Length: 403
Image (cartoon, rainbow, N blue to C red; front, top):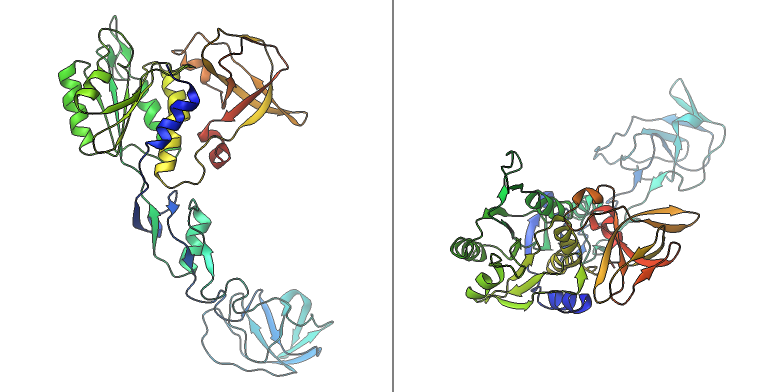
């Protein structure tokens, strides 16, 4: 049995290296940028109006009107003092103009523009290159791409972006007692909650599973399933069959396929019988415990950090916060406890409410949970009001969950 810190280090040290691929900007959201992006033009690319109004030169209060300039108009137009052009937002500034007066501050009568007061020089004009100069970096490598980055990439002339490829993930649930969610379980059977739990948890964090299957828990079926999936996927996640029971074949079947297991038991609760290793091709393989809460915690603590590192994310360690627990908690020594909690703000501090739970199979106790509090292996008794370290679920806090 190894400590949590050592288990996480082994997982991250054996995650595999990120790989670069090129994707269109339509499919790049959620990926991590692999190289800097520079603009191929000035932004804005020309002097333009920031408002609907009139382009004028100088501070005269009376101007003869020329024809209107609309957005996209490529004509070369020149004005001088005493002359004004009606102009739309985004339209090219006529040569000689040095300010825009907005419509609301003008009076037009008989093709003459009258002002009570001229705006200052440069008013309501976006000057060429004032946002970005040609050749300037607009997106830095290591950036997790979001919607605004796609707009910036398009403005910089990039329709294709170099990103770190997200790994192809295969998910396998095991167990002869497992039936599909839509079935009415017969005696001794339970519905497969782990499959939708795992695939949803992965998907909510930007890592949709490429394939998900259920396998019978006999050695031949497991061997055939694992062998086929390891030839296809980058990361294999199996749930169930990893304990020390007579029907827990997953670790031995993995070893028969030349998967090197780095650990099989972690000093934690929930999720003690957690297995991790690498195939001969270096592909990470997880064997998760079968109880749903153990599955959820194991993915949060080990699988997601590995996937983020493998996908080029700069932040893949959980960001630690501190809060006051609202009730007493007691435990035995020897194992670190990940305590499911509801973290909320009160009087400028974090409070941690621990819902009642009947164990690692009690998924209902997690309905409103948004974080995990950390109770050290040697801590035995926690009193209400004591401060505990905690971190948010990735799906709750997004990038704020990692540092």
